[in-house]
Length: 70
Image (tube, rainbow, N blue to C red; front, side, top):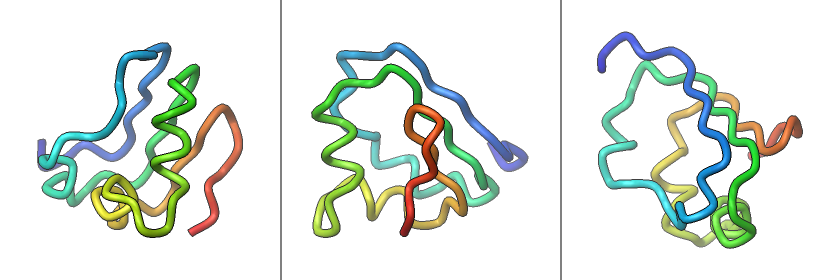
């Protein structure tokens, strides 16, 4: 998906992490997450976690309307 600029994911309580392919979404600039599991939110916010590395190319990550500061 070379032209994907923004992506919203909501109410996916069973989602525990992001697939490896997220690193290939180079045009993705905004990711909005709403109603996700607490585990996923904690994983994203961990500095040493696997998910933050997969999301590092994304300029803006929002969790329940709050911007995640990198």
